[in-house]
Image (cartoon, rainbow, N blue to C red):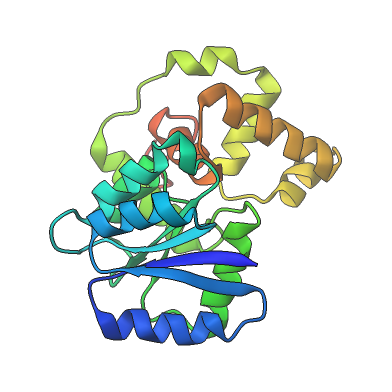
Length: 221
C-alpha cells in the first residue's frame, strides 16, 4: 500500500483528495494536516510514503514544511509533491530546490493525480510535464548567474553527460537510447550522480543541472 498524507488548509480540498485516493486499492490516506507544522508532526509520526503538500498554509507554510521533512533523516523515504494553484509559481521552484519530488496543479485531472502518486511512490520525479522543466529553467535563470559548482568535479565525464540529459527532462530509457547503453546502465549512472551530489531525488538533479550551468534555458546564450 502507498501511504499518503494530505496537507492543505482547506478541508474541502482534503476531502476531495481523500475520496479519490482512498478509492484506489493500492493507496491509503493515513492522515491529514491543516498547516505546515501539523504536516511535519504527522509525517514524523506516520512515516508516509508521500505527502501532498499545499504551498500556502497558515503558520508554517508548505515550503518551510517541505524543507523540514526533506532534511529529516528519519523521513528519507518520504516523498513530497507540491500542490499549487498556479503553474509558474516561484515558491514551487524553491520547494523543488528544497527537496520536493515535483508538483501538481490543484485542478489536475483525477487520473493524473493517481498516476502521479504511484509514480513518485515508485521513486520517479514529476518532471515529465514540460511546464515543470520550464518553471525550473525560468526561476533558476532569474535566481542568479550559474556558477560552476566544485561538486561537479566529483562527477565523471559520463555522469556529467547523464546529469545534463536528466536536466533536459529525459527518462532513463531516453538517456539509454541517446547514449546507446542499457536502461539499467543509465539508471546506475543517475543513481551514482545523485549520491555524489547528495541529491534527494531526480528533481534535485534537474535543479542542480540548471543552477550549475550544465543546462541553460533555451532563451539564454
